[in-house]
Image (cartoon, rainbow, N blue to C red; front, side, top):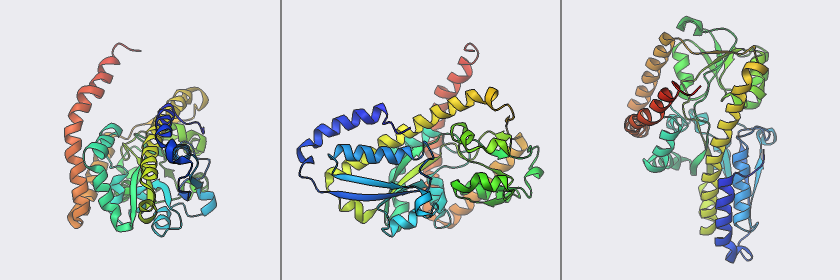
Length: 359
């Protein structure tokens, strides 16, 4: 799983030629990057590895980034603090883990009932999203860049079937971000647990349910062995991971290295999304035969309606208290309303119509 995708190879070849003139005598730079994930958690870890590989290739080996997984630094949910403080020049994580520091960071990862991956990427790169994300992170002294999108995430693994809102009351569940607050409003006992502790927590009854990512990553975690009810998504329609970079460290880089790092991050983020999609497609295809105990479910409409109502309440409450949250959230909603019309006409209608004739 440590290959570099076709897009990455093409860009690397181009930039290698462009940087050949300074590679031999360029400044030697050695960075460290901390991840929220254990070093075996593919495809999340593949994005940082691709960045390190591409940056090294594009600078003739003069810019080296050493990557450390959570099993080494033992601080999976403290990446922002470590990058801010300069312990690591760079980090790879998800913004909603810092919701306790600033709620606006949560909606930079994804929003319940929000944009899909195409819409969100378009907002980030061409709708002012990148500028707003940086405005949020300026207070922490770090730069933030998209770090790979999972697309729509599944709604989670449950030990019992959810037939009504009452079934959520008293449930112990791992679910981060704004979605956690939404479920808390509906009576769920919400907790946030580091990725490496999820299976043990579910197995030992510390939690009754959890959400992780999608089939490609979930199956190998073994959640289906304990909680066979697998629900479709609502809460994370376009979960974007983030690369975080210490501002002082980045600003001290030669311009050529800055350009190489930015290009490498965009390539790696894009490739991670493709890889995750392929993994989930393969896993979903295998589920019926290899994992017959899994019961794929959708939340009943009254439950979804309650989730949407609670989600609106949470977002409106934050927007009323924090002008920057409101600015980001309004920007997302304005862009989504415009983009969703095209999404329906193109993607949705195509899928609905083609399903009639393609079996």
